Image 1 (cartoon, rainbow, N blue to C red):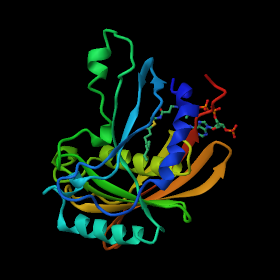
Image 2 (image 1 turned 180 degrees about the vertical axis):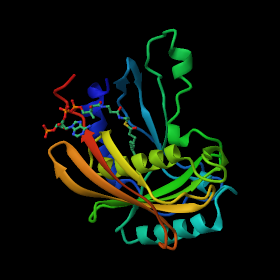
Image 3 (image 1 turned 180 degrees about the horizontal axis):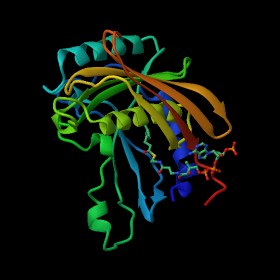
Image 4 (image 1 turned 120 degrees about the vertical axis):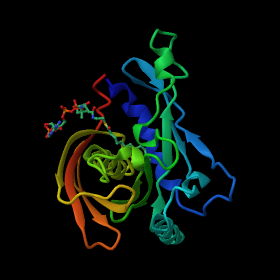
Length: 238
Ligand SMILES: CCCCCCCCCCCC(=O)SCCNC(=O)CCNC(=O)[C@H](O)C(C)(C)COP(=O)(O)OP(=O)(O)OC[C@H]1O[C@@H](n2cnc3c(N)ncnc32)[C@H](O)[C@@H]1OP(=O)(O)O
């Protein structure tokens, strides 16, 4: 299915030097990086648009807590030890042949970036190359409710998947999630800010073994922990 994207998506490796640096000025939508070559997924050719973080992150929806964490880590980016991970928005089927499905597919959005500001997945990630780890600050909006007043487990699973996937992708390989195991230990209040720490424990060939923990900002509550297996696509398998 997605195998044909493997060699082309290796260009993701170029991302590793792209992030960090100062926050764009107010009103700056931020530059965007379109991975140059398209890829095929389910017969649709598209591209992933990666946006250098923009002022979007500073909408009213962000609590003081997540802004503070954002500022702290932007400071850490100044010496190059941490890099801010680019955002990514949507797959554009601009090269696809006209088909009945095209109309629907042209509306494709990356799931974790598909909600209006503040309603869904509000997050920012930073990556440390040396430590091979990623930290994600996540604030789940009101449309991610599960049990009343609490974050839906699937929403958390999405964020664990994305954070773990990014941790592997930042090594320069494009990966797919093969396995995720999550222990949900404590419920997460909807709208609260949580910290997802993800690291690569082991790499075996194309297999990236990643672990994650999900904590409150004060680190007093361990909400969840998880392990994941991410596999880079084999260019030999078409
Ligand atoms: C900057 C931001 C950018 C962007 C950041 C992007 C972040 C992405 C986050 C979201 C990611 C997703 O949602 S991904 C969508 C959900 N996932 C999927 O749809 C994946 C569906 N599955 C697949 O397409 C395939 O199974 C693959 C690609 C995962 C693997 O297929 P394959 O390439 O043919 O691999 P295969 O030869 O079978 O296996 C290779 C090795 O892995 C092992 N293996 C394979 N599957 C498993 C498994 N489930 N559990 C254990 N082990 C496994 C095999 O035993 C073998 O071990 P050995 O014999 O070598 O020892």
